[in-house]
Image 1 (tube, rainbow, N blue to C red):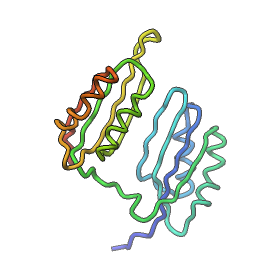
Image 2 (cartoon, one colour):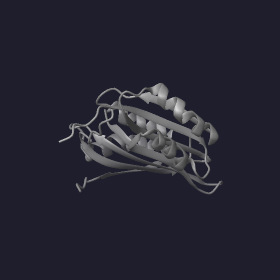
Image 3 (cartoon, one colour):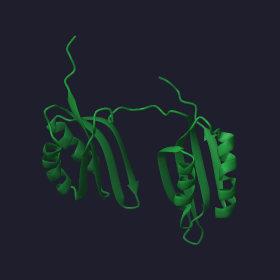
Amino acid sequence: MTPRCERSYYAVSVVGADRPGIVAGISEALYRLGCNIADSSCAMLAGEFAMILIVSHPKPFTKANLLEELKPASERLGMTLAVRSLQTGEEQHRPPAGELCQITVYGADQPGIVYRVTSALAARQINIMDLHTKLVGSEEEPVYVMLLEATLPEDITPGHLEQLLASLRAELKVEIGIRVVTPVEL
């Protein structure tokens, strides 16, 4: 058996005005550099495009090498680039420790929905794994939609979470739904 080579891992983020070819341009630069994309998430927010990747490269390799090689592609695409070196173990996917839930929030658009809901979850050590927000409806009657995936600590059940968020639901005048997500192994 051939031993696996040691690898350096990096978190790469790219943000800028949305246009076709961003993912192709950045992934081509990474490919030509010999990097492997281990994990990624991309989203368009209003007219901005955001991309976060976890990439690896055989050692020896440095953050400076990665920045130097990605900078021309990022500039050509009009994107802002940031790179962070990951310490050993940070690159590993960790399955959620507790019960996985999907939390949905719908209501009239108003300042503070994200802050109030996420701070209530953080105060109870509920870890947010994914969060998406969107404004729907009309200009006259905008509706704010927030979708979260979160893991519950062992001492909090979905029923407890429902009770904990009841006062917030009334205060913000929003609908909050909680659904347990059953993981499927492939």
